[in-house]
Length: 323
Image 1: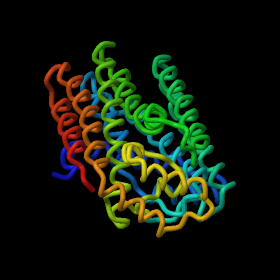
Image 2: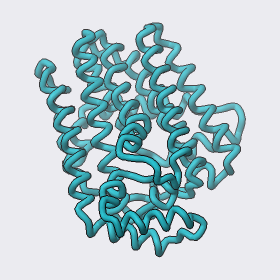
Image 3: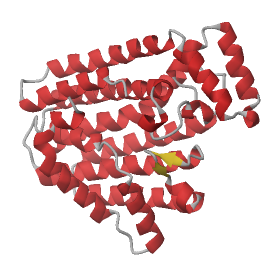
Image 4: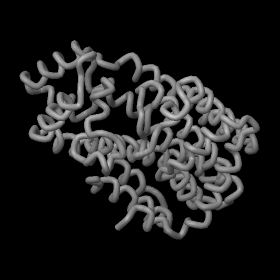
């Protein structure tokens, strides 16, 4: 089953959201307009809007309100991608040149700032202080995550706790916030809104762990970037942390990071193969599954509905993802 098929009945509403995103990012300045449009054209799963709409169906479904939430959250996600690519000196995302590659770091940073500002401007159309408080706290945590990612580049003096906190801020919080903001905008009671938040958080953790696994197991064509790209950027992810329990492998990573100026594709592919040949991949999937099971448990506490079934299907799809 393809993921999009699970929520195919939301297609028209998602198309409406996509059209609104395109409208919102249009800038008077030609460079900002072109750069923002290029980013939108690069595509993406738009999973945050999906979570907003499905969570909204648990309450009173109001597309006008939910669209505002979904557009804002997707724009924030897009802004973080632009900033991440600058931090990582990334040339390719989803198989296409990044904004920094096309326009340079300065334009890329201003483009990310512009998209973030438009997201904040969009959310002001909703006057619920709970939504603004939740969004503000989430943005603060996402920014802290970006700073920590810079700090931890090529740093072996970190542990699994650092990694889990980083992916929480990088991925899980925005998905959790998507679920809860959709619920708040639809008048869902506080207890069920919190359950949806916990579902989103655990799904986000599971999703990011699998993304980090795929960085070692998927092909460059599937990834839209070179395999082992995170390690190339000096970012330690779960499979590497687990593989480093082997002393020989730990020494190899230590040597690699101590001579980061000499890192090349050949050395990275050797490390990728070492990780594939270790138990780290299966151990990583096991941790991903623990988060997934927590997500499904929280979801099971909600009243039965079509949207609940769809959220279940999405969770199960994510858990089985191997490409």
